[in-house]
Image 1 (cartoon, one colour):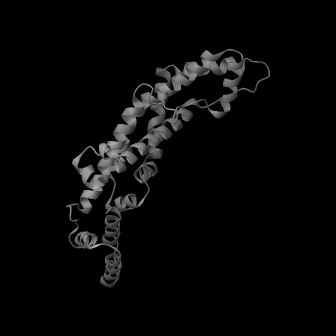
Image 2 (cartoon, helix red, strand yellow):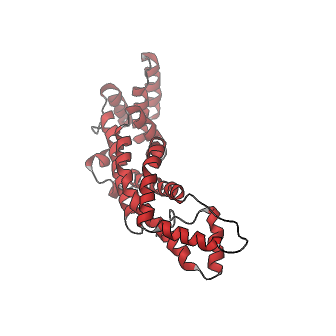
Image 3 (cartoon, rainbow, N blue to C red):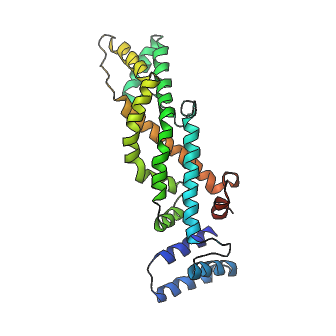
Length: 252
């Protein structure tokens, strides 16, 4: 059913002449059942399918799926331990600081390392909620043509669409929030303590990392990862289709 909708959307979105349209319809009618033939023909003629879905419904369904998915994803990550206890997105020390961790732990200095890691994740959790307005703005800009591309794409196509259009504004908006959150959660203090402890060790190469840039990047990666998980649930799991429109567009 979804493949038929996608084909119909692509045909109606394209500026094809009558002869080409007839040829495309003939191919579809030969390969599909009579029920599917009626669905395709109805959508092309009237903009609606047999179950009442219009191209407007489908575009609205995609927007609603993204709004629901981003809200759920952000709510999960902005909760306590949203990042810290999720192994897939937990923020660890930057690559150049991993030698610090190994060295300090080998000396029994676990606390400054543990404090730094926990506080970075707390900062990401604190900052995550600021992503919602930026996502909502991008979702509102989705066009009919965008919807066709998303429907034809993978189970995370909508998330990829958001990433392409929001990565830069999210980074710009996120970094000052992360900086504030790093200070509020004492991440900056713990980081500086850890690095200072390491840098006092004789003959080690000094480390100087832009912590806010690093946490910002990792926080955004975690958010997009979680939004993709929510999108896949909405596409596949009836339980996640929590509104009538989502059930109509994505239901089997």
